[in-house]
Image (cartoon, rainbow over all chains, first blue to last red; front, side, top):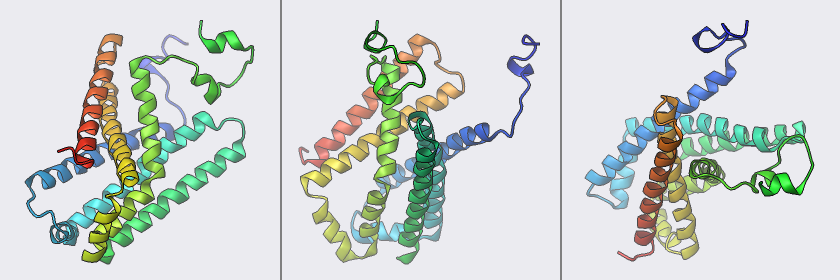
Length: 122
Length: 135
């Protein structure tokens, strides 16, 4: 049985939570990397490095939405990563790990809220 | 034989202090720095948003921010964040290539680990020199 249960023939069971988070972490990483390239291009082609130039960039609705989409990607990406850290190092107490994980979610969601406020208040 | 194996007879789950006893290969160093840099940016995320907030709120807060970031300690924190971003970015790209099964053998993995360190550290050093007004 063991021999035909490897490679492409491996019987995949479960709800695929692990695969979903693994894939999501990579997709969100690519989105953030593309946003980094966009910022770099804007920086290298820019010529107005005053407040007007900076705030003018964030006055565009498309740029606000792109930035917020990246923040949401960051939220998911960091959740998977930080959760992995707690899973690896906080192993002696399930309660303590749960506390850390809940704190992580609150930290990230609150940060995303702060980002939304910054983006749409200007 | 490593310190960990010699020093104790404890069995069971590995602890963080055990991990500190190992001498890491370069790929291992890149890996743990990936984790540390990610955690650093996670912890300082509200600070980064605070900087963005002050830079956008008004011309006055923008000017005040310029004063705030001219202190050496704030500059140091920003430099740490810049390094963290550069390292996390480069090591992340290396990860993506490895996910596609490129450079998985020992030699190639070591080479790409060195490349990550060289690129991220030199760009961080350049940013540091710029930040502290060397050029």
